[in-house]
Image (cartoon, rainbow, N blue to C red; front, side, top):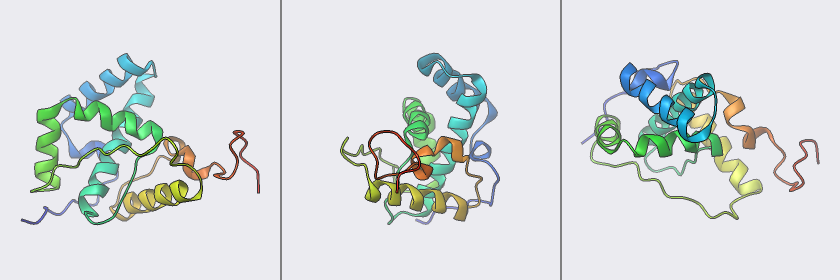
Length: 148
């Protein structure tokens, strides 16, 4: 069974109903104490990430820490998440497989860069503020952003 073509959409938000989108954003606000606007951006990027996963079945992709919040929230809505997977990744459930806490450094940054490029290639806008690990230096564990 092949996945239906995902139209070149500007936002991940377009992949689910407005009702579900608002429900997911509200859950993020409640559980994570972020603004409604930020929660909506997180859900949007989580959906774009999942669409990229559906289109890139054989490639390892990973969410940023913030986008992962949106994925976790969506998974809690099991029926809706299962329906999303059935629609965009038929015959496959997009499993959440956490990485080790030690998955930092150049390899992790390269994985996130590949993920951002896969999202862009799928036709979705990337909110780089929600992918800070991609722009932050991966060789410094002191939290600086301009180390060589």
